[in-house]
Each structure stands twice: as structure tokens, then as C-alpha cells.
Length: 74
Ligand SMILES: [Zn+2]
Image (cartoon, rainbow, N blue to C red; front, side, top):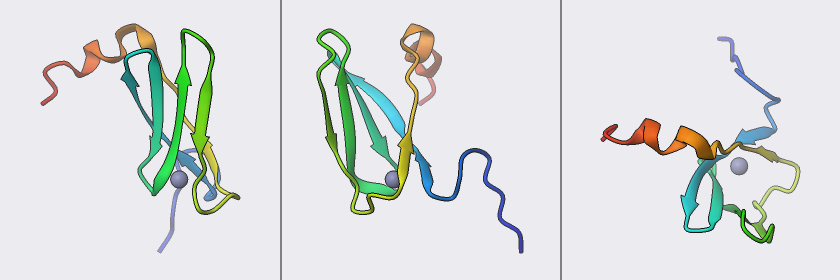
């Protein structure tokens, strides 16, 4: 059996992003406790680290068209 990773290393997790008002919130599908939030008005940011500090978390957020692409997707 072979395992293929489409991006990054086995120790990196790709986060899911969503918008809450002025905040962009990144959560990890694999780490329930992990949360990173960034206020795009003030630049303020808070991170709740995952239990494993060696895991690299990465994510992206595309404000333009991001939500529109998902309207009607369910
Ligand atoms: Zn994670």
C-alpha cells in the first residue's frame, strides 16, 4: 500500500477557513483544538495551538469570490 500526499509533508495540515464578521477563522479538520483567527480590519490575530506543536498548519483564504463559489453548494 502506498500513501500519497498531495501537498506538504505528512506533518503539515491544511486548514479550513471561514469568515466570521471581521475575522477569518482557520480550523484544522485533524486537530479539534486548533484554531487560528485573524482580524483583517485590525491585523489582530489569535492562535489556539494544537496538541502537537510539531505539526505545521497552513491555510489560505480568498475573500473575493470565496463565499460566492459556495452559495447553493448545499
Ligand atoms: Zn492539525
